[in-house]
Image 1 (cartoon, helix red, strand yellow):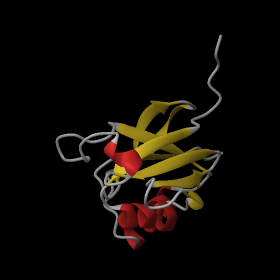
Image 2: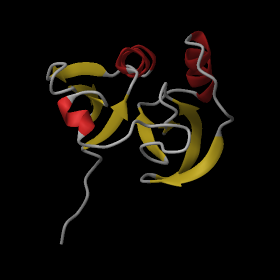
Image 3: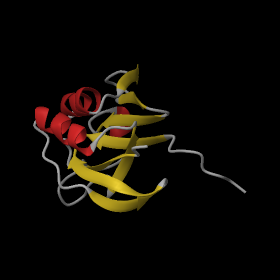
Image 4: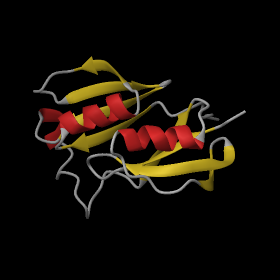
Amino acid sequence: MLEIAAIDHIVLRTTKLKDMLAFYCEVLGCKLERDMGAELGLTQLRAGNALIDLVAVDSKLGRMGGEAPSTSGNNLDHFCLQLKPISEQAIKDHLESHGIQAGEFDERYGAQGFGQSIYIQDPEGNTVELRSQIN
């Protein structure tokens, strides 16, 4: 039987690579792991023990996935990033300092059980759930 240990990676297609890199690196703290070049169109970001792959829609790899993300056809419903311990207010303050609009914290169920989380959107309109377990 297979047992899932963690999210390994997600792949997001984009028409806004520069904005997506700024969002995931500057706002959420991801680090550039590999840039496979504009022709292939794959940029990989380290997100804790997982990767977020950004694929430019107009690249070789991106064209294989069809149309670009849009308001009527996003890549996914949402994904959740588990943050290292940080207060809800610190998360809100950080997002506000980057001009990121966020909803309210609410109790939701995830891989670590019930906990408080908040939803935000990246530049392509993908919903990102942020969650921190405070000990």
